[in-house]
Length: 88
Image (tube, rainbow, N blue to C red; front, side, top):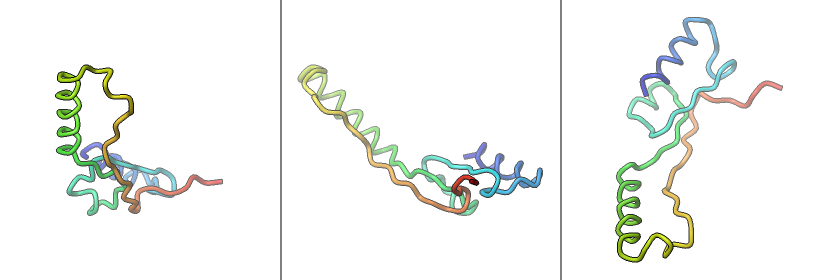
């Protein structure tokens, strides 16, 4: 989260408007994201780790080719004030 906060603060120091001139987005929905109005992707690292462990155990038990489909972990976009559509 630190470099995203630093980006927003550096933009302010240089009179660059977030989000009018520069959009900033983060991942993991850090605890301070809401305070800074940071648009972010919310992910659950514990769910991702559990999913990875299940895949590994399944591969060890049945072989890596047993899984025929891709696997995706849940994530959701939380839109706040740090992003905007590009200027036309």
